[in-house]
Length: 120
Image 1: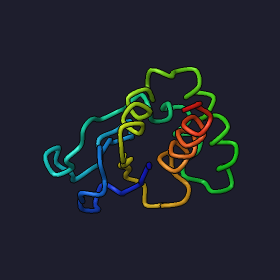
Image 2: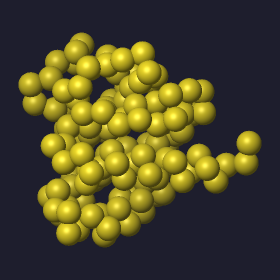
Image 3: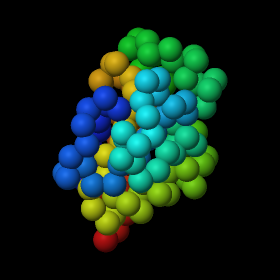
Image 4: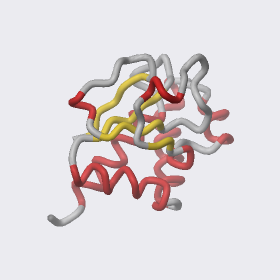
């Protein structure tokens, strides 16, 4: 199971393996306070895509399409997340204020699709 949490939300036992999925380190947050298994910068959207999207909900569908393309072209970036999700709970940590239109939401959707397409 894959969960989502903002960097400002406290960690819990139900989180499982926690991964920061942002290209930039969030402001005002210390590394020790996040209790993360890893910082996966390359699983975040490219700087160009992030700048283009600019958290504009009207660009959400196109952002998802472009981001999924980036992820498909760089499977090594998401491999740690897929592997961890096959072992147990995973929480994607993000810093966006918008809880519906952000890279972690799109990444979770991408990972869920990848995991559901695998034959077990």
